[in-house]
Image 1 (cartoon, rainbow, N blue to C red):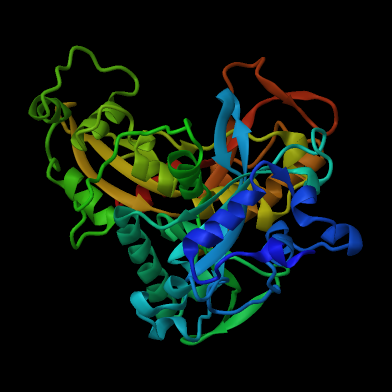
Image 2: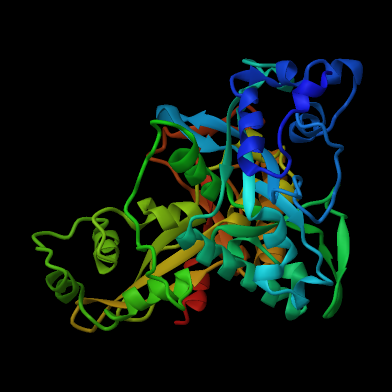
Length: 453
């Protein structure tokens, strides 16, 4: 390789970016210029291969940014196209490993996280199915661009970082979950599920974790800052300086709480909305108008970035939640191939934040807004109770008992029941039968406990 290939100013972010842009519209095979061919069997990450071949520096695990003089960290990350030709990030962006022993003594402004990730050089490539492109070296690199966190995102990321730090200070590093936070997560990062580290305020070892930007956040980065002509702007809850001293959660809850105790009719009158009828999803409309939005909450910029799912809960005048809470239907033949630690259900609970918006009927059958609260499933409820239901479901499917899956009376937290349009809406079982689609549900009595009834 010629020295000219590495001709860029290592102290200049712009020079580094310009050098990275030479990779655009090339496959990894072309970009690596024979490096992998000469080192057959190299299973390193695609980003690591680029570091050596295109930028000319050896792979390392330094605490400093990859380009230390310029303060630039290189990250290579894939995206895919989903339905309606919609580009989305394929996965979270993993940043630096969390050192539980030193983290509690850091301040954000001089933290290892901030030193390493203030300025990111994002190299995006298009990931495609194996039947389209069998070899990963033939994936196309499409964009290379410097990225710094927008100011209003940075406030939320800092609050996320502080929440992770506080959990470590409480001796609960083993209970960290990506559902704890909004944009910045603490994802598991190790050779396998047995990769554990000591933590300073507990004798219990914790899974090795790294700071990461959530998949939902990276999808927004991709669409708003990287892909030309693909901007999909949504309503925003925040203006640039709205948060002040608030976190995203406290800001949203303040907006809701000013309506506590009001009837939905009074709320809609206050926000200037006429109520001619109350369709099935009327409470979702009320929740949006309380935050002065025209569209559903989940379509806002902040909710999309944080992967916050809204669940509107209605409580009867007797103080009971009538409906259990459903999740997407599973396919019998695919479910039994999963392992708990990487299962779709566990990943969904770990990576999703929920906003419960609670309405209640009074003795006159009038519907009132009671409260809103953020929720993610407690560690033991997930790892003990939900797992028990998941394991039992797997066993019964394998035994040909798809019509007899765990019910709400068998577990205090979750159960399985039909989730289909009609009796003809089915999935094939491992035994070749066609059984109505089903999904996991949270028990209505469990939801009552979680919202404090």
